[in-house]
Structures are given as C-alpha cells and as structure tokens.
Amino acid sequence: MNQLHAIAARFVDESKIAEILPLGNGLINDTYQVRMQGSVQPDYVLQHINTAVFTDVEMLQTNIERVTHHIRKKYEARHVKDMHRRVLLFLKADTGKTYIEADGTYWRVMDFIPDAYTYEAVTPQYAYHAGRSFGDFEALLSDLEEPIGEIIPDFHNIEYRLKQLDEAISADPAGRMKDAEVQCYVGKIKDVAAEMCLGERYFREGKLPKRICHCDTKVNNMLFDKDGSVLCVIDLDTVMPSFVFSDFGDFLRSAANTGAEDDPDLDNIHFNMEVFSSFLEGYLEGTRSFLTPIEKSLLPYAATLFPYMQTVRFFTDYINGDTYYKIRYAEHNLVRTRAQWRLFEEAMAQRQAMEALLK
Ligand code: GN1
Ligand code: MG
Image 1 (cartoon, rainbow, N blue to C red):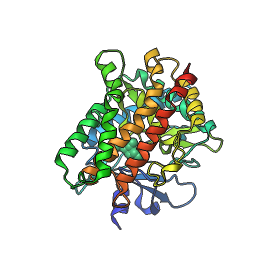
Image 2 (image 1 turned 135 degrees about the vertical axis):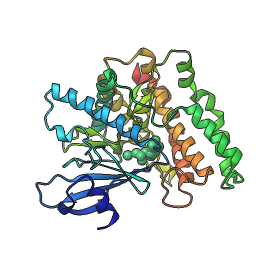
Image 3 (image 1 turned 90 degrees about the vertical axis):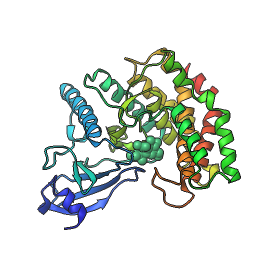
C-alpha cells in the first residue's frame, strides 16, 4: 500500500479504492481524486494541506466546518435540490476529526462532486452566474454567528503585503535585487502604493466594513453545471473576514484577464470589460441585501487592487527565492509578476469605463 492509499484508508474503505490521481492546479495544496471501484460508489478528493501556509489546521477545518454547515442548513430550509453537489462535505477520519496528521503531514478528504466543470476563463454569461454566486455566498454567511478565525492574518491587507515586499527587498536572500528589471518593478509598485492603500485607510476611518468573504475567488475555484449555472464554490481555506473587494477583485483578476495568470506573452493580456459588466450585474444582485454605497462605489478600485496585490505577492516571493507559491520553472514568479503588472495597467486604463458602468 503506498502512502496516498494509506492516508485515504483512514477516511474511506481502503478495499474499494480503485486508483488515486492528481487533480486540479492549485498553487498551495496538493490535491488528488480518489476513484472508487464501481460506478455507484462516490469518489473522493484527498488533499495534502500546506502547513507552511496554513499553520493552524484545527482552526482551518473548524472554519470550513462552520461555513459548510451554515450553508447546508440554509439550503435545506430553501429545499435546494442536489445538495451533495451544492456544498462541500468533509469526511471524518478514524480520529473523529475532518483531518489527520501522519508523520507531521496533514490531510483531509471531501466528497468529489460529479458532473461538474471548472474553467480557467469564462464567457460573460458564466461571469454573470459567478457574480450571483459569490454575492449569494457572502449573503448566506452574513448571519453566521459562530466566529471565523483569520486563518492567514492580514491576508488581503495591501499595506501588510507592501511591508513584506520591503522586508524581502532589504533581506534579498536570493540575491535578486541587483537585476535592473527587478529594480524597475520596485519603482513602479511604489509609485502607486499610496493610492492602492485606500481601502485600508477607509477601514481605519470606520467607513468600510469587513464581512465573511471567500478570499480566493479565482475562476477555477467554482464548479459549474453543464448549463453554465454555478453548482458550488470550492477551496474554502481562506474564508475569513475581509473587504468585499477580495471576492469581487480576485474573480476579475482571473476571469477578466484575456491571458493567463502567468502569460509569458504580455500582448495576450487585456481586461475584458464584458466580463466585468456581467460579473458586476450578477454581484450587485447577489449582494443587494447588504452592500453599502461606499462598498459599491469602490468596486472599480477593487478590480485594480487585486492585480496589484497579486503582483506584489508574486514579486515578493520571487525576491525571497520562491518559498511560497509552487513554481514550474526558475523564473516563474518573475513571469507572473510581469503578467499581473500588465493586467493591473490594463485594468487601470478601464477605471473610468468601470465607473461609468457602475453609474
Ligand atoms: C493561491 O490555492 P490557490 O492556488 O487557489 C493563493 C491565492 C492567490 C492564488 C494565485 C492561500 O490560491 O491567494 O491569489 O494562489 N492562496 C493562498 O493564483 O495564498
Ligand atoms: Mg484553488
């Protein structure tokens, strides 16, 4: 029995496992599909939790259990059909918890949702559904009474991310600061830093609330049904209190980008206003019950903040010598930096058009 089988056996009947295959392309955790024998058996998703990123696994799983339990209760009250495809369900291991520790590594298992599709890019119609769904997701969690811990403190705090960049620049552990291109990005990032920290300033002034948000609304973190409607929001690791900008901005960072997140060809990268407009429409419908005027007026800012923040995060990791994100080649984080910066510039160029649409 190999290691993955032995781990899975602590959650499911080992004798019925057919095979275990890699699944998805997340940059943090390692994910596998556990295929069971026979067509009636449900399959499962096995995940190795990256504990360099998620240091408190107990808090991580408590957050997720609270969130999924709350959503499930609400769906049940609404008589939502197909429940097993609408909200994630984590299995209890032999320990009674939804995770296990094995030789210092941490693992969890959830039901595999069948007949669902993930995408790296969407049409405007899908973007509308996605906007509704992330809006609904926030609305569903707006009356969650149990506390949700800040699993990664200051996760989407741009002032904090800029501070981490400064620390990386001073330490320069990989000797990458001597490169002229690296110096050039430092300058560009700093030039607009004050403008990009607007949200944090409003928060300190008491003008902006934090709500329970998903905080990783990349388009590949939702499962779609055949007809383009959204089945289920997945990857709940980062659910925590944040500005709604997190969910609005991060979706567009992936979905409105006409290129790839790490596109080496910068000419592929534009900010798709049709996707913006449809997503905005869906999101405003989904959040009608709670979104305040100031949150609403700052949605175009959010669409620029997230490419900016992701530039800072990839760039910091590059300077640090690639310790956080999985990379596939040596310069990957620099290529990601260039691509996210280009997307930021493209989104900035559409700011007025976004404001006009909002009005
Ligand atoms: C990571 O886990 P994954 O790949 O969905 C990251 C996000 C970044 C994203 C960039 C915990 O998300 O914040 O926006 O990569 N998650 C964490 O692709 O840092
Ligand atoms: Mg993911």
